[in-house]
Length: 186
Image 1 (cartoon, helix red, strand yellow):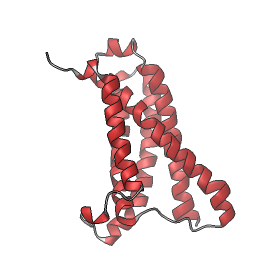
Image 2 (image 1 turned 180 degrees about the vertical axis):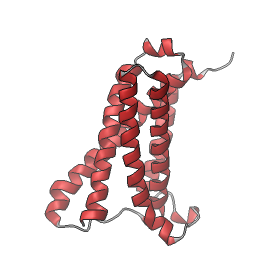
Image 3 (image 1 turned 45 degrees about the vertical axis):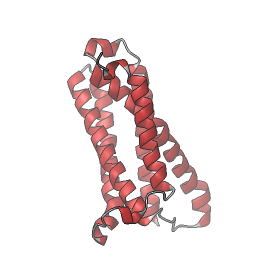
Image 4 (image 1 turned 90 degrees about the horizontal axis):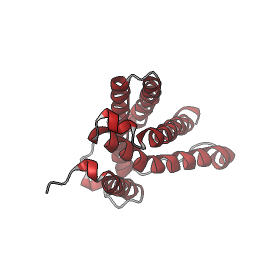
């Protein structure tokens, strides 16, 4: 008896979410030592936040195009835009975690009032949404890639996908706000 991914979407979603979040929390909490990774030249490491801001901006655009495509019943374009969004997110996350493991978190250089009342709440909401998005994204992705289109329409993909795309979009936008506060304004 062969195991099929389409018969285990919830289990796979849970497993992939746990592994992904463990990697993120491992990097954030310093469990992954910086010496375990090869060190890129300093100019490359310094460029990562700027590259990630560009990746986030591109993901915002592709998510919006994906939403527009599905509203127009352009299923192939929707799928392409959402897969591009996922690839941009994976690229962002790999670069972010790489820099985080090597350098640690970036200190906020601005005034204390901005830190407490703007930066921290924005960062907290961004992080919370990013964490909540992980299982939602895995679920919608697994449903989409393991079923024919007719079966996707009959699944919770549409409902969960709307929530996932909305939260993902807000998370990316707030991530760019954090970037602007850290690297542009201050």
